[in-house]
Image 1 (cartoon, rainbow, N blue to C red):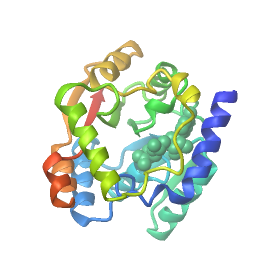
Image 2: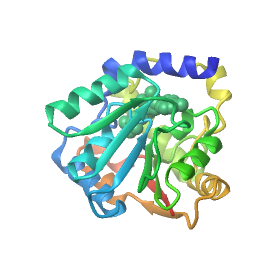
Image 3: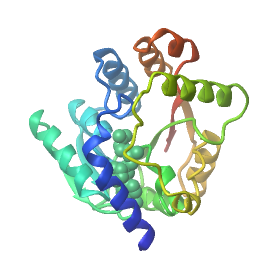
Length: 244
Ligand SMILES: C[S@@+](CC[C@H](N)C(=O)[O-])C[C@H]1O[C@@H](n2cnc3c(N)ncnc32)[C@H](O)[C@@H]1O
């Protein structure tokens, strides 16, 4: 599929610099601890069988492995997975790495299927959510996301001010390039991953009882690390949609 090839190429090119962004790989022990607590609170008791889709350089996979879970990490980009593999080896964490599209997960019988910041770039997120349901028929779903794109009112204003402050301080961009606008337009969630929309899509795919959790502790820890003007504006709201 041509679309997947374009997406794979983008992430292969992004892999060398992906972890430079603090959003992608926190440097602060406080932020990392907040993420660890947020994930621990939403995973079943260890050791559970966990599938991390669009695992990238391993943000969620490595946290889950440190919590004692048995993790399979899948991604479209070998360059991203090579980074994940290197980090897992360095930390002596046993993460299984599989190069495959997220909508075709390996094996089944998972206790948890999770993702962070993958859904927006899937050509068919509904199909992926259905495939994950089949891969975890009695398991749980964790969609770890942030509020961006389709936001209004105060959140839109905050996002604009954040962007301006980054420009003033010449904060490097989070990625090596922008997505091609035509590619982004072809993606059903390419304009934003609003929690209401994600909850509805999860239900349509066969997941039950979606619950929305705001990751206020992670946001607070991230905000504490920012310079003063940015701290006043805050970070983009982070949330998890959990379903059964
Ligand atoms: C924004 S990054 C998120 C990486 C990681 N989950 C994190 O939180 O840092 C998106 C990741 O999804 C991967 N990806 C994009 N489309 C995919 C697909 N169809 N199947 C599997 N992985 C995909 C990319 O290669 C990239 O590693």
